[in-house]
Length: 316
Image (cartoon, rainbow, N blue to C red; front, side, top):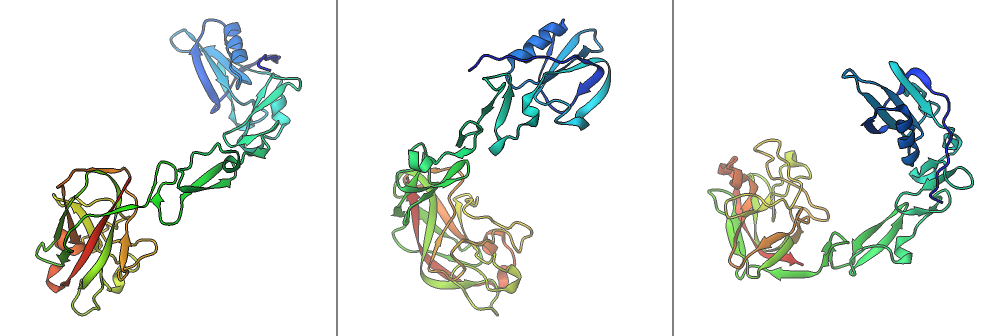
């Protein structure tokens, strides 16, 4: 029932309700302000009064002073008017909106997404009723008021827009990088398209950021790096690092060091995080593989070693 029936109480002079204004207009007449409140389903009170330029303002509120008593303030020349509001005493479940003046009971509930019922008390199981938008290669899990999509085993993606298992090997020969003197590796894109992330598969070698410490496949075993001890990064040809991990950038020592879920500096494979947006690539486009200290030229003199890897790209 979309017909609204409300009754206004007598206005309170020299008062306004603050912090709950949902609409404001310059109006010449208080009766028009009252009509505006009637036409706005969420309006349960209004402020009306003069401005310094001689005009009058009408402010519609979605609360009354009985709901938010601390928001009622003095304001000379204004009138605060509320309706008889049954929503004041009715609890709203699951962040529903109670609108006064509708239906046989004098109120109705507007349910947020994910809920239904007279008082929005019932969670909608989007996974069961088919209203979810998960990718066909993703699993849907119902949650309170919503749902989660996760790519099925063997796939990577955001679960909604894509889940891909199409890993394309990019390099022909292993891509090798050293730890100093700009000794980076280079690879070239073999297939144009949209790339969502990369992975590196170790083929040979090891690296270290200090000759006194044990070498690793991808990083540095110095304790000062803690869990953020992977130091292998992929860059564009201009040495700009691709955002494939949550890099530390606190100092030269930690620049572009990071950790990955399910991997460490000695893992056989590094699967990077999904890029924030798909990377559009062309055939022949160059990318580089760097050791972080070598990239930022930090304490290279005691670095040592070389690691070789195969590079794979995850395409749509």
